[in-house]
Length: 112
Length: 115
Image (tube, chains in turn purple, green):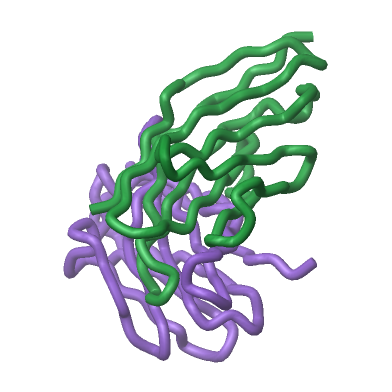
């Protein structure tokens, strides 16, 4: 069964560094998303992406964040200058229809 | 605005007994509703979904949920719990089925299974 994959599974970085989280969505999906889950808190929406552009973003998704679909298979989330409060589990999701999202296993980001 | 409330942060049941995880939603129009499960150190797995078809929805691993519009509820049930069901369960509402929009997660219910 096709699945969303994410790399790396765990990323440790120093405050102020740039990180890129990578996702490979399911191949025939059209909609792509990033969510995050700070330890002990709810899963929060960050951004949705369709037709090579951002379709919606939350207030969390400020200028430090960007997303890209550099080729036909990858979907990346970049954090330009990480802060301690960016430490979280980041989930990528994709869907054929906008409301039925399939999630990847997540990348745990630890900012020290 | 849409919202979803999971009424119990933690539920503990004995193996072989029924499971009930409660979820209430608020939506200004007919929502799409989902249950996701997250096992420790794993991603989010779709258990089942309601998208305005049958109100009783069957999912994987013996789970089912019933959409009750009058009660604005979408409770998750399973007749007989198994040790492997121990996980975090999230009730989710989709604001719209026609746009690439965010889905809204409940705060989660941790299900523990006693031997």
